Image 1 (spheres, rainbow, N blue to C red):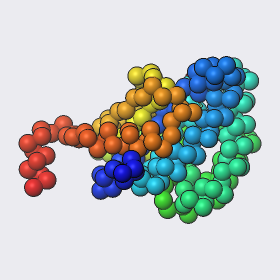
Image 2 (tube, rainbow, N blue to C red):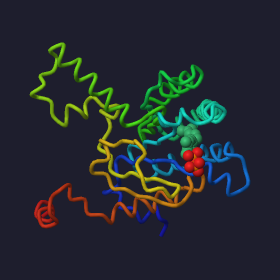
Image 3 (cartoon, rainbow, N blue to C red):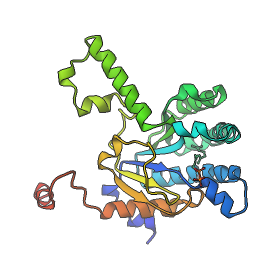
Image 4 (tube, rainbow, N blue to C red):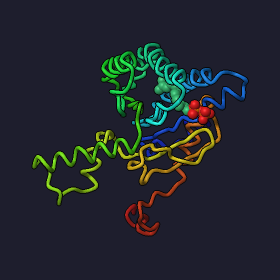
Length: 250
Ligand code: FPP
């Protein structure tokens, strides 16, 4: 029985997010330049997105470039931005063929013109994909997103569109970049670190967390399915007791 067959299709996490870490260390371990790690990481993106679609995951959000990543050496930043353009150009046809719709979250204004326009074109060309939504988090950080939401809510209150007394958790969710996406079910981090690094902090409130030592370029279909199977073993109580859940499911 393959790992994919072992996955209970009735209980697949609808929204999976991945902190793709370890490209640099993967390259170093092989005596290669960091650049090679990122290139191999881009290959993993394709493999894992297609594997997610086969498992019937609906949303896959990938942390491709954080707000903090702008602080990396300019050469590496340029290389990553070029890699995005190249990968998008190479993969768009394949994405369409696999019914994968691309979306992006983050401060896209900061992206080089070429990267931004390649991305927007890919978003448009893949917009009718029905199998999986692949959300690329680019120039994204959760605190940036939350500060933006706070600003927009403040403007709403000032203009009388919002009443401060009726601001709820749902209001905040509505003002986040993820507003049209399902709740985050499973957050995976590759590369051995146990932290969330300013990624989907609000959205991860009830997500199951899965950390693996595997470097991102080595993370493949099998690794994704192992993470999903691990998710399926968990009892998600959302603050309730096991007994309450049992009664609700009777
Ligand atoms: C973290 O590894 C990875 C990144 C900062 C970049 C992620 C980018 C890709 C996987 C390539 C292209 C992506 C798309 C969506 C086309 P690291 O450099 O921090 O690794 P290290 O911790 O081992 O140094």
